[in-house]
Length: 388
Image 1: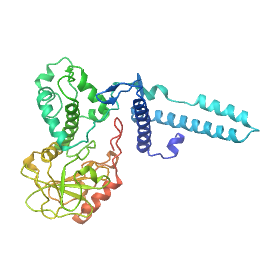
Image 2: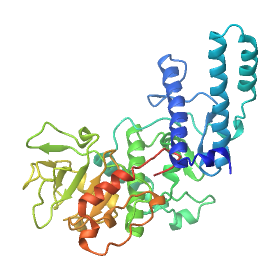
Image 3: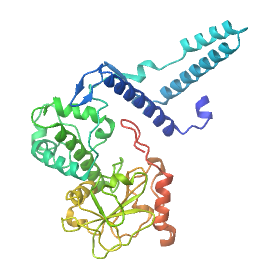
Image 4: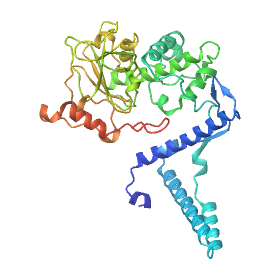
């Protein structure tokens, strides 16, 4: 047993923290270089100028790399401590400096494992607009015109056209979209990859980002339809709102609060003090004002179609459907009748497993237990890393 195992580390949390730090450092460096005008821009964002970048993805499959990295960081920490002591303790300064230099020089960095070829100069680019119902629906239209014949409605790429190509297209309903940076996906759309031509001249910048938003939503919907879960987290899309008692115009303004989306059904649902509720129309036309006891309604014409894509349902199947997003903005649960139980949580940690079937309705705990379970299992998502 290694010293890290004896500490009983939460490996997922540890690795996610390392990945977050790596990405934040690189993104900060890129932003600084962009601010200093030392790097070129591509479609309005600074481009990564180096042939290599830090990559912690290997830590997901080899914890020995994590151990080596933690050991190296410990060595560096000890070296810095000795340097601080040498600065204050003049009599023993030189021996301490010698030991500090030796520790810093000999630290067991897993260099090769933490470096990877920078796949594209746009690796760290992100969409300039929020993930929204509008962008999902616009992306669906772009996909239908340029991608459907090859990739298919489910994104698996097993259409006759795709099977006739010398290089098969990737499966867009798999974890591909979550393993790769958004900028890498954007670069592939811009310049082409494998048998796919580049769309730099045929699609605008906005259309390319809309297409990426749709592919994420569609992959989530395919999984929800076929497995009954969202195996990878998908964010609640931003919606335009019309609220009677609050100066809220978009769902993104409720950052840090739980949000419930309700598709109008046979009965008018009530407001819930634990959640910020939004009513969506059930006839393909979003209501212009709140209905019943819910204060906020969406007047976003794309809302209903976007929710259908995300859930893998048809628009006609949506009336009565409710969705809950957690405080971090991730869609977590779905119900078709408003009677909530833990079995309605579709996005949960793989380590948590499937909730045991309760012996009674009371044991299910309703929405209180569901919210508690969501809070206890927060989504820990890093692009290219863990999804929960």
